[in-house]
Image (cartoon, rainbow, N blue to C red; front, side, top):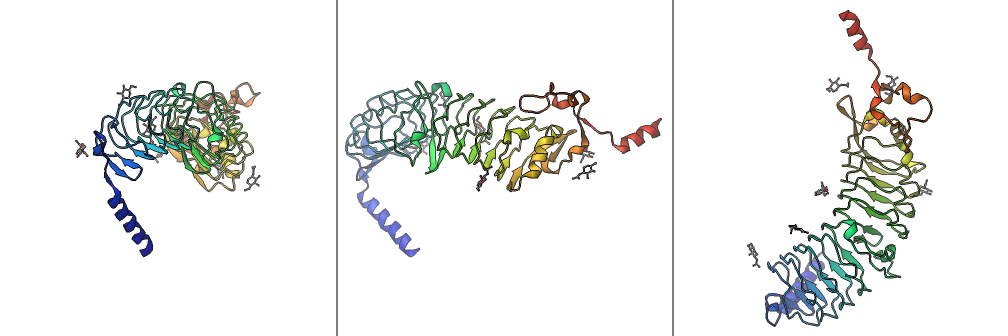
Length: 364
Ligand SMILES: *[C@@H]1O[C@H](CO)[C@@H](O)[C@H](O)[C@H]1NC(C)=O
Ligand SMILES: *[C@@H]1O[C@H](CO)[C@@H](O)[C@H](O)[C@H]1NC(C)=O
Ligand SMILES: *[C@@H]1O[C@H](CO)[C@@H](O)[C@H](O)[C@H]1NC(C)=O
Ligand SMILES: *[C@@H]1O[C@H](CO)[C@@H](O)[C@H](O)[C@H]1NC(C)=O
Ligand SMILES: *[C@@H]1O[C@H](CO)[C@@H](O)[C@H](O)[C@H]1NC(C)=O
Ligand SMILES: *[C@@H]1O[C@H](CO)[C@@H](O)[C@H](O)[C@H]1NC(C)=O
């Protein structure tokens, strides 16, 4: 511990020793530490001029930059990382990073980007991480990135070249790639992840998705975690998880699901975490789901409530023998939906309880 503290002290002393105001007009508000240029937290509204051409790391986070000139970074051929976290960018010029062929990390989290020019990253063949969390990206406005073969670690080979659009991304750890989290995606193309066969985690949380293509995850057999938290999903396609044999963790909470068919889990038996909280689930429409839940031996974390006659109940505590299958649903399959659930879910009725009979009889 003492050793670590000592190292930190020495490092910060070194930094202090070497941190000097950069020289040149405008850039002198920033600090230069060797080839690192720190312009963070300065209330800047534009990128300063005279950034040293030797700069390898450029920090511009926590400013109020709303536009960047096309040639702002044109001389910075050594640039390896640029941090524009928490600014006010709503668009970027197409050629902005075209000279920065050594760029590995681009952080654009916390801006107001609703689209990106298709060729924005086309020269950046060494890119490893692009962080676009917390922007206003809509699918139609995204560019698809030319993937760099061989960069396994950060998941770039996961993303094939679409002709016009896509995607991104923050990697959390080498085998986890978070995608699209907290943007404004309302729909996704069916083949979005079709070449991303090594993906282990997909995070589509906090978007405005109201439906999903049935084949969306069909190529992603290594998926272990799917996060669909906080969208507007009112139903799930029956085939959605049918290929995801390694799936362990599913977040479906905070959507508008009224029912969940057990069919969507098919033969998946390794689910350990399932969260369906904060959905308007109707208890009597969950009969097969509740039966499926009872059979899961590895499901250690489950949470979800359903409504039965205006009362919320923990799904696992609900006794489905209270529900009566409507007569019209008992015959043939004509009333079944494509996911195997009954087509007319709210026709479930409560069995009259003996108490009600007694009351009725005594009132006569
Ligand atoms: C940035 O602006 C805020 C609010 O006006 C102010 O409190 C802060 O001192 C400014 N920071 C710098 C480095 O000027
Ligand atoms: C975000 O961008 C939109 C236009 O794309 C604009 O109307 C809105 O004011 C911007 N919001 C912020 C916080 O800058
Ligand atoms: C849910 O998503 C919306 C964006 O669609 C976001 O503004 C909100 O903060 C999210 N809520 C939570 C609890 O993350
Ligand atoms: C569940 O996981 C085990 C290993 O933990 C694996 O051998 C088995 O094939 C998995 N089951 C399914 C249905 O994929
Ligand atoms: C709903 O909950 C209330 C309060 O716990 C209880 O009195 C009532 O009997 C419940 N209704 C049904 C139909 O279970
Ligand atoms: C469910 O209710 C039925 C009839 O009311 C009862 O026979 C059965 O034991 C209950 N099951 C559980 C698990 O409580």
